[in-house]
Image 1 (cartoon, rainbow, N blue to C red):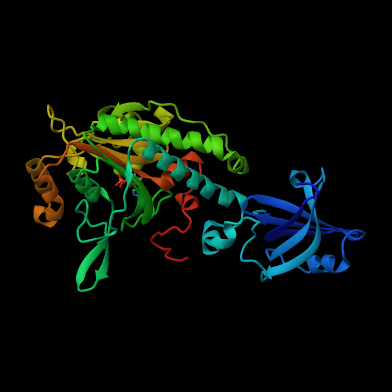
Image 2 (cartoon, rainbow, N blue to C red):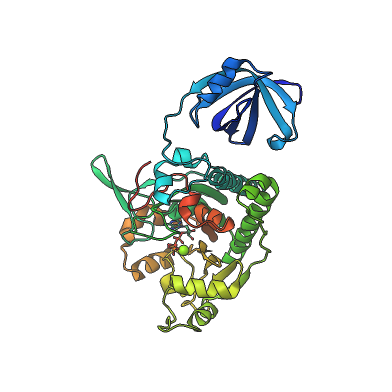
Length: 420
Ligand code: ATP
Ligand code: MG
């Protein structure tokens, strides 16, 4: 565009006044542009305006593009007109250049400034690319995108980890998972559905990988078993990595990441094998039938070193809607997708037989009456089906090797944080 006349608006990232020449570095979502005000070439009033700009003020610059090797990306703008669109107060709540570090709470309190840091923004541009690649992948594979309700009358899995809300004169909750509705849609004949939506968990977590509101990428597939949806899941994850590595080169550079696309198929280890790995070097051994704790996940992750599946979980510790194996019902058709650092997804072939489902709900100490709206869909033709839920925040967190899931969520919700 050398020689072209342009209008460029952005944030005044930096003002460098060298006396005879003054530089204004403008920033927007895509990067930086240099506006050069040499005393000889530019109207004095423009230089005066720039000298008095506070950092982060939003300005509109009209001017001519000139090739200049020393400028960022090889071009500068010689201004003919500068308009202040919105003045920024000073001091700023935090440093948007990232030179002066700020702790997580300060950054989250002033998220609108924090996101002006190119490295903070990069993670969210990549997150957008991840969602886009997954949507493409699902549509290519015959899926329908659905939106299930987030205000519900009953828990998905019993338990108490629900946020109650007042709903006129009734009690209602924020949904912890689209599980039951995805399954009802299988009975309806939607065949293959996906949803990217919020899930709410009322647990008092205090970890780097849990929030009270998260985004889950959920799928459900009719006439499929757990093996089929595990293949779908590993391909989805590999697809997201591949797309990001091809289309987000600038953002990866800003984050100083060389993204390696995980190779498929991922390794499958059974729960029993995983337990052996976990118990190898451990004081209090985990017994068969107990859930794997964080320490166990870490030990196994170290041994595995890449994405892997844990299969053949004990039926007892998987939710009631998980299909037991026909030949040995103490083993289920549930699975977890693991990154060496944490769980990314859980899935299973589901129970599709009405009587078995009622029994499983009872076995887990719950009352089938509370699930009538769900159970009815199993009485009039329910195909065999399988599916999974993958945490978007955790996918991005592990992909970019971020410290904390809060760096992969724009406005995180945790026990202590409800604003902004
Ligand atoms: P964990 O055992 O790590 O607490 P979970 O087994 O309770 O997770 P699932 O119910 O299996 O979680 O949910 C499916 C996926 O959704 C998880 O694998 C995870 O990626 C994501 N997810 C679930 N709960 C949270 C949460 N509180 N914060 C962030 N992501 C979550
Ligand atoms: Mg899980």
